[in-house]
Length: 248
Image (tube, rainbow, N blue to C red; front, side, top):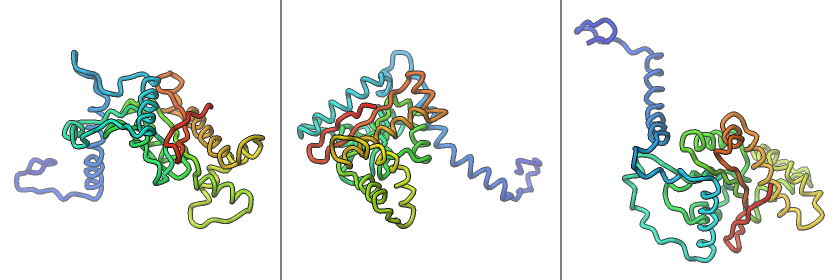
């Protein structure tokens, strides 16, 4: 039966506009279902979602996990356990903006299990628009109480930015956009009197990305100003496996 005219013999033709509208609604359905799961409060008497904790508690859990990882004493886990329950929703305790370096694996670095961390990764751990949108999703709809910008020692993206800045090398493809985002940290680090330029630039880049997140409207900035979330920076040492917090 036609849903438009009610004629049992009439099968309406689906217009391109109708097709696109239907496709858009179908695409949004899993998203909206996920929002309902993530945003709904627990039933009376039920245990709260695992991310219903203060930002400082979330940070402490990360630091404790990193200590276990660095000491090679991680919690033993059955990674298959809880898979069915995780289908119903995700409740990460923190969002991590990490470098894409293959040697940096936040879930291992902080000794967390599936569903514990919402991780977005890009070379140089910069706040690109698409990554900011992902972090906004984590804050707005998954209620993460903490965002960490995670740099690491020996970062190739930062090292490339230093070399381009010093030699005016022209890189191919979209790499210049990446360098442009990191270059301000290199310029500030160059004025530092102690340490070496690469380490100082890595630290400064983390500080700048943290500052950018804190001032990124409307979602992240509002939650930070309202003290609903905290935003911190850290640098992972490739040699020791330890994460050092970076003071803003």
